[in-house]
Amino acid sequence: MKIAIGIKEDNRQSVANELAKVLADETVLYIKTKNAHWNIEGEDFYDKHKFFESQFGELDQIIDSVAERIRSIGHYAPATLKSYLSLTHLTESTKEKNDSQGFIKELLEDHQSIIILLREHIKQFTNDFHDVGSSDFATGLLEIHEKMAWFLRSHTKN
Image 1 (tube, rainbow, N blue to C red):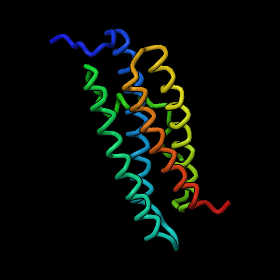
Image 2 (image 1 turned 180 degrees about the vertical axis):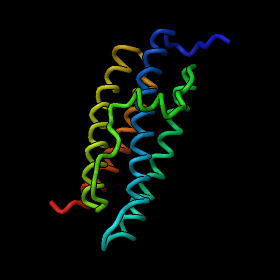
Image 3 (image 1 turned 135 degrees about the horizontal axis):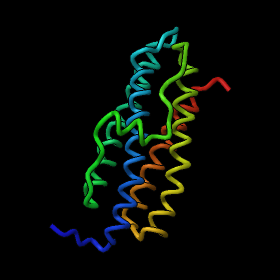
């Protein structure tokens, strides 16, 4: 069935391609946050275990909303680990110690990296692809990541 939502097909495809990368980043960050939740060690274990649990819960909701946004503009969301690893700009966890400060630093860097990319997408979706809805969607994601980064930052020793 033809999709008639006021956005040209090539623009919808371009937005879907960029959102697929966002979906990959969100999924990799989700797994890294799960890793922190499962493998945290130290005297602050319980506090950070629960903290990471709340963070991956938010990321789970983000992942679902990104995939649904891709579907709402008429495209299929990637859904394999192989595709996510080929699309993400994040790296898999490289830590050797399982302490809270190491996990927090790494996760914070990833959130900040996603925030920067989302800022670029906000302009790109509106100006280049004439998709105000996806621009607004990216703005919402940006705000969620800013809050999550703030919470992570609040747990750092510096």
